Structure formats: structure tokens, C-alpha cells
Length: 389
Image (cartoon, rainbow, N blue to C red):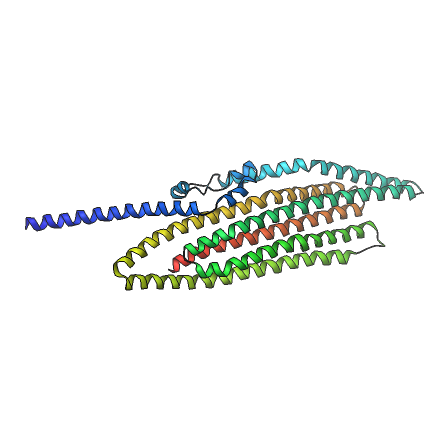
């Protein structure tokens, strides 16, 4: 009886040691898998984009080091720190735009004085000519600020597209590594085309349409004989409609494809795993368990790269949006200050420039939102495929 109890105790202890050794081996395999996959991935292309950001924004970028991934390193900054960073950036852009505010106010006050002089003298030809010159200078400043905003938007869209072209192949490779073969085959070429098409529409169609609508509206404010208010409003409505259709088509494609492809991947991988364990009893089970550990490492890397991509898109679009927002704020403040003093045409000109800059912000924000949605769906597809398996 005593010998039986001793034998039973030895079996229990040996089983516990074997389980502990297997867990330790799995943990080491998990670490080695992550290190090997990170060494094979060309992360230098993605990290190069982080170096192009300002130092304040670089602190927001999550680390892709294997030690940080295993340790689950927390976010570098909290939400409060992020809000303070954005607020400081906005104040900095306001300081840069202070010269524009000063110029607009001076020209508006001068136009108001000329308007008062024209009502005091019988001959209004010289005064009206001077008012027209002031109005044209105001329009020139407005178009210059629009040119700066459009250039910033084009550069931001170009940077995001270049980043997406570097990120999509890496995410597709990691998607295949976690078993999303069908999803990667479907999404990678179509997403590449959709991202390029979105950038082309924003840079070559929407921004020129906004400029044309602004020009027609400004001409209508300058002279009642050359009034094109309907054309300007029609072009603005066309810009809003195209943006809405772009977002609906892009999001609809992502949602529909994202709901179907992971199911097929999950079922295929589950069937392959079952057949491997069934027809190769011992080696097949070991191979399937080892594959689970490797896939877990690939899933961790894919999620980390996805989070890196999401944060990079936010950082790439944050500074341009804040710059354009500061310009919008300047025009809104100048319009509120000059409304009791100036002619109605001056106030309408400022309102036109403000609405045009808002359209530039909407176009840039919509493009960034679509890219953000694309990365989010790609990350979610891999997680869903693993879950379905």
C-alpha cells in the first residue's frame, strides 16, 4: 500500500515537472518566434516615417521592439498629455497666423474708412477705386492662405498614401502568417488601388473644385455684374457629395469584405488543423501545437504594427489639420471684428474663405478617416480569423 502511494506521488510530481517544462518551452518558443519574425520584417520603412514627425509627436509612437511587445509596454503619454500637446500645437499655429490676422484687420479697417469717405464726398470715383484695390488685396491674401492650406493638405495626403503603401504589404504578410490567406489575397490589391484612388481624387479633383468654387464666389462678391453665386455653391455641393460617396463606397467595401473573408479563413485553418491531428497522431499534434504558438506571436506583431499604423496616421494628419484649423479661426475672428465696420462684401469674402478652408479640412479628414478604417479592419480581420479557428 505504501509503495502504491509513493508511485502515485512520483507520477504526480513528474507530470507537474513535465507541464512546467512544456510551458517554459512554449514561452521560449513564443519569444524566439517574435524575435525571428521581427528580424525578417523590414520595419525600417515604417520607422522612417516616424522620424519625419516633430519630436513631440514622436513620443506618441508605440515601440516595435520585441522586448516591449513581450512586456506589454504602456502608452508613452496619457489622454491628458495628448490633449495638451494638440492644444500647444494649435497655439503655435495661431502665433504663426497672427501676421495674417493683422493684415486682414488692417485692410478691413482701411476699407471701412474708405467706405465712410465715399459717403462724405460727392465724387466717389477715386474712393471707390481705392476700395476696390483694398478688396483685391484682401482677396489676394485669402487666396494665398488657401494656397498654403491646399499645399499642406496635398502634402499630408501624399505622406499618408506613401505610409499606407509601406504598411499594407507588411499587414498583408502578417495576415497570411495568422492564417488569413483569403483575406490577404482579397484585401491587399484592392486596398492598394482604393488608397491610390482616394489620394488622386482628393489631390487632383476635390482641391481644384474647392479652388474653383472659391474663385466664383469671390468674383460674385466683387462685382454684381459678374455674379456666379449658384456656380460656386454648386461646386461646393459637388465636393461634399463626392466625399460622401467616397466614404460610403470605401467603408461599405471594407465592412462587406471584412465580414466574409475571415470566416472562410477560419474554417479552412480549423479543417487543416483537425486533419493534421487526425492523420498524423503524434507528430501532427506537436506540429499543430507549435503552429499555435507561432501564430500567437504573429498575431501579437500584427496588432502591434496595426496600432503603430493607426497612431502614425493620426500624427501625420494632426499637424496639417491644426494648421488649417488655425487659419479658419483667424478668418472667423476677423469676420466677427469687421462685421460692424466694413461693407457687406468684405464680410462675405471672409466667410467664403472660411468655408473653403473648412472644406479643405473635411477633405483631408475624410481621407485620413478612410485610411484609419482600412488599417482597423485589417487588424480586426486577423483577430477574427484566429477566433474562428
